[in-house]
Length: 456
Ligand code: C2O
Ligand code: CU
Image (cartoon, rainbow, N blue to C red; front, side):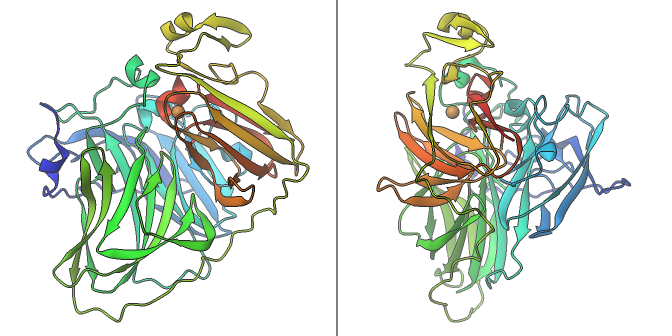
């Protein structure tokens, strides 16, 4: 028996766990085990790992230019760390074990303390044994508020996840290192939740204007999203405002780790429903339901762009181009690649659970992919030579997508590449430190798609 998502569409699930407040120098954020009702109520609760004991973890909200200060205490049976995804952060706070800090052992704690330069929708997640820990629920939203936010009636964070539960018991299957997932599309699940709930619904008023902050926290699923009973614009991607809001006229993709801020107006009438819809091979289904009530106000028209963040100006004129070849995976198996300085055959690598490589390395290499001086501009060409899509993420920086006509497109921290696709991005290396560059399909990162760059 497999979960059939459609049969769950009417189940109602309530959050039942609340964060616990500790007595630390900084507010405490405890990574701990908890039980959470993910599957329909006729199933037992699912043991999860959550920040603050909830899934998603406690929402952190700070004003732009403010600081995030948290003592992360580890009450889990496994070492952990926290990465603040998309924040142009002080390198020492980036949360990467073996590169920027040591793991937080069970029973240990780490004080994170950093400034947030940019407003927008970000998130935080475990960065140790990520393929398992994020799948178990170790993530939460991090919202940085604009000093002059656009006027909306409701500001809703919607954090999408894709869980793989045992259909008999409702428990998370612990096959995180399954070679089939690692070498194919990654760990895809059988239940999709938004804010930890199956088929959540929110009350809205007719003609209300909503800001929806979508965050894809799933290990590997690329959502293809659309709206129904709503009209509006995408106003930011990966936290960064679009210069011109993009009217939503069709479905749009949201890859692992990507975010999209939408401002939408409720067009469904009182006692009707509007929804956020996910499209898949076998059709569309509602992810979030908006139950419309009340008479509402007049529908507004038009929208202004969000206030810009203090991002660098990019000129690609004399910027060197660096090529990153993405290799391996099922159907394009590696013939060989390096672990350290040792060249191994694809078969030897597969036995070690390595299926992918970046420029011939099946793990983070000793030398950085790019070694740059502070303030220099670079272009990177990601060449996806594999038969699967990937979501390439750079730490500590946002980059601009170079569009096919050579102009600079939106700012992002994670770029989707379809099978066989090549895309170029440009960035100013303006944040000193050692930064990861990896696929955010977490099984791919764990099985070879991991590199880094250094800014000094
Ligand atoms: Cu969101 Cu290296 O991760
Ligand atoms: Cu990948």
